[in-house]
Image (cartoon, rainbow, N blue to C red; front, top):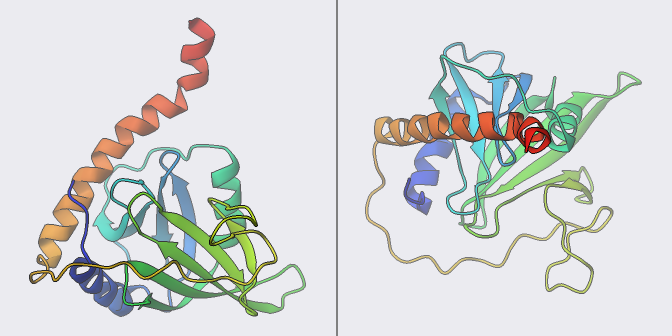
Length: 207
């Protein structure tokens, strides 16, 4: 699968704006250590695939017929805690780069509506998912960076966007059909990784 360029993300973002804004995330399925699916309340035949694969991070709505059981672990616990039963308020590309900001709302344990954002940084080799509160303070991140780094990512710090990528001039993006075909092909290969990770403890035990 080739890396999706900025023009491709613009096409994907346009579709997401028209289809998933206002939806509730009904369920999360973790496919492997870096890919997961979101089941959406008002999108019947498709699910949102989010991949944080370091080689080619991307997101896309795909037609899913086969959904494997979720991989249990920290990623599953984090995503279910933060995303399940959450409403998507808006979806926007930011920083003129391959960074998608989801603004969301969710009722807390006291039935108060809480607003927060999720930044999906689809930068090859530096893919990340960062959750920030209404005051732009980091709540959780898939990958953290120490205070000594050029761009620290730690809970409680203010979120800063990654340095702007110097993207080359691109040709027109592919069609939405081509994007979905590439995304669905990737999903089927991710299911193979799912099987390996699911049974990894058993393989180690037998070995």
